[in-house]
Length: 491
Ligand code: NAD
Image (cartoon, rainbow, N blue to C red):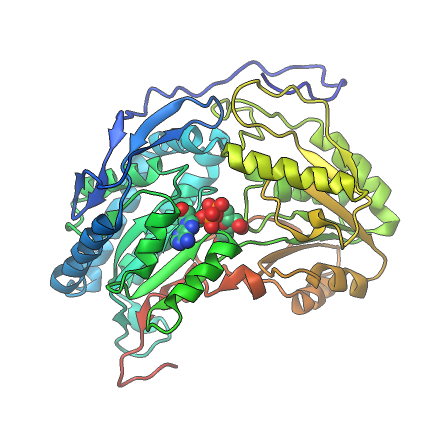
């Protein structure tokens, strides 16, 4: 089931599967509204394991009536309980949630791998610890909102409608729920239809933490449910992470209302390697930039820009490294690249990769035995890519790297910025001055220097251009859920 890897791999790894026994899956799940699980009025749908196509559970679908009930519950909880509670008390709930996440970390990590297809090693070592860190971080803010830069007594906005994607189900939930709650808002969150299960486990954690009913509501469903939620007149704030197409539709829906909006959308990041970069480290950063989480990462380094003088060396080392990546069972602790999240996403990756070949780019993948059931795509590198190719312009959202070259720093900046997106970028060089100069010129919300895909709750994250607007994380992420007190005015 696992990849062949390079022929000079003398030692094979023994299978090291994590047990799934820790996860107590119910055959079906309701909606989490007003502190309890209730039936939905829509048509239930299945959530499957993308690595095996096995049905994991049936999940309720929220229709407009359910959205109404959830928004009303959130409003009641906001008016009667949550907005009145001192910040220091709200903080206790957030700390409690963070501690329970740590206590149930293995359960959350296994369930996230099962429902999403991402390697357990990543859910265990990255997703879940960073989720807990977000709740700890924003717990610390809950009684210090007057330092958020919005005057002496900033107000919560009210009810937040939050819609999230499938690539980091629990982490995107944490990015949304933790700052909203710290700031005194209540939430109605809709997870993606292919990965609802960890959000529903999070609902159980809210119950375990004795969070007052209605402060967090989780409704499941697909696009229609999300549309009903963001369009509901009882919502004060819309926070969306997902595709640029849906982000644009949401922007149109809320135009003309007084709803506050943050949109975290797609990306097509340039990972730029200069000839003075430490090549071995850069190769690790390139691999991490595009093959982490199967490339299902909005800020993935999907375009490698490498200086012409070192292109051959970098590519040779990169291919050797990619040959060692292990594709397969997400629950195996040796797995580097797991399953593609859905048949639809796999079809999109195939379609865009075929367009790369048709447009004249050169395609390469290591020898790799893919499992016969489930959704899989071998790590892929395209060379001879031109800026006009679709694979250089469109977000593939899969383990596919497009390689371009440059000669001068200004050409690198020109090519990196030649995209409708502006979410992230990476710079690999020995020179601190060049890092600062490049960071100043790159139109990207995040610029990593000699590293890639690093996340921290204290650091704001967000995009320019078609990557969206608003910031999540850090003090900026908190400000997105607060209004300045009228007497103070915005500062
Ligand atoms: P998507 O836009 O198809 O779906 C995202 C969410 O929106 C899902 O919950 C979906 O059910 C819901 N939705 C769909 N149509 C809707 C509508 N009309 N109104 C309201 N909600 C609707 O995106 P996806 O395929 O789930 O996720 C992948 C995308 O997310 C990529 O483009 C990726 O770059 C982006 N993303 C961005 C960030 C970021 O922080 N910028 C982070 C993760 C993912």
